[in-house]
Image (cartoon, rainbow, N blue to C red; front, side, top):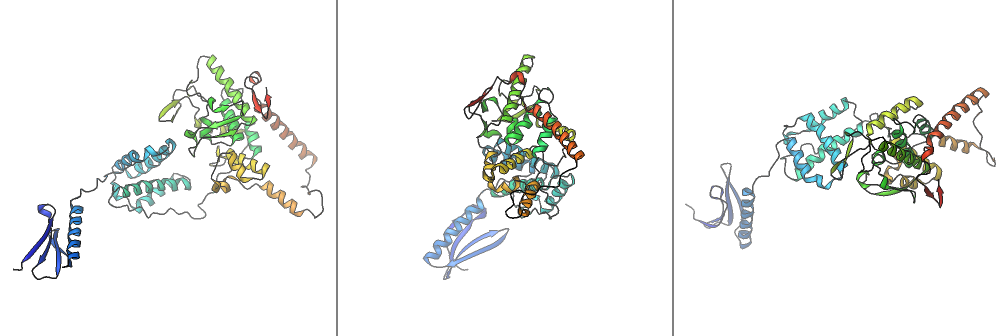
Length: 443
């Protein structure tokens, strides 16, 4: 029997790792058993080799006795762990979007679906299900990205043994890619304003909100949550709160006259509602308030009652589109007014950065998506190119016939008159809130 010299022993009794030298051997060996089989690893029998063998054996022993990761079993448990770890660092709106997207995935695969068994085929099936319900391609991409994000987080935390969906790629054929939402044109805005009355208790809210969107170019969520304390009438500025801003920052914007008219009307209706015995909530003091107790929003970690609901605005906007003959375009909605304002600033100034700054967007990469192609500007360029050198006038389009001119003039006059009337604040309220513009006070 070969004599052995044991240099070190590591680990518990039933899983020991031995470092030894056999008599006359030229190697230092590390011996252990794994699943009933004898395993061996060798180093040269030198001082450095013996030290390296001991260090390796000690580290290997510690890795074998380390407790197994606390892995999650189901998709429901995975989401609970993710939300507990990540939500404290996310804005409320981001938390809401993450939760909604994950909820759809969880409903699709099942709350008790084993988290570690998600495969690329599951994501293919999920994408097909979202496509079947006519979800927009970009939203499908966001939902798939959400699933990958949570699983990547779980893999980093060793909560799943294997992340099989990490290599999933969301691709679209060229014919599947949709265009960005269109903008409203200024004439569309005028026709929509003409269909809503600030004197009506049923339509003053959508009218006033539409006026703010069409003059300030703000996102609808920020406009809905505008408060009276956010408005500085003396300086003529509006402050948009970080809690309801997409980029999570607080910023201010000059107050335009059309918005001023809308604010006067909202103030009058707030006071009238209070006099009639159904006062709007005092805190927070929403500009676009609702007396419906079920209407609330969540901000600053709590529920805030009394805010005008966006679903009511969508319904009023679509009714106004039908009445005015403005074509309804999918996904245009309130963002179309934001793009309209950016386009108007660009047309007036020729400065695309100023257009983005006015609507509060700091990312110039989205400039191409916001500033839309306008055919009338292209036509003007074409006419300018066709003008002979030295000519003082740009040739105009062929004139309409007399009957056609009269009909068009009558329609435009009628729409313009009605729109102008709806732009004015209520007469009996027009002196309540003076506003300073360049030193002049409007009364």
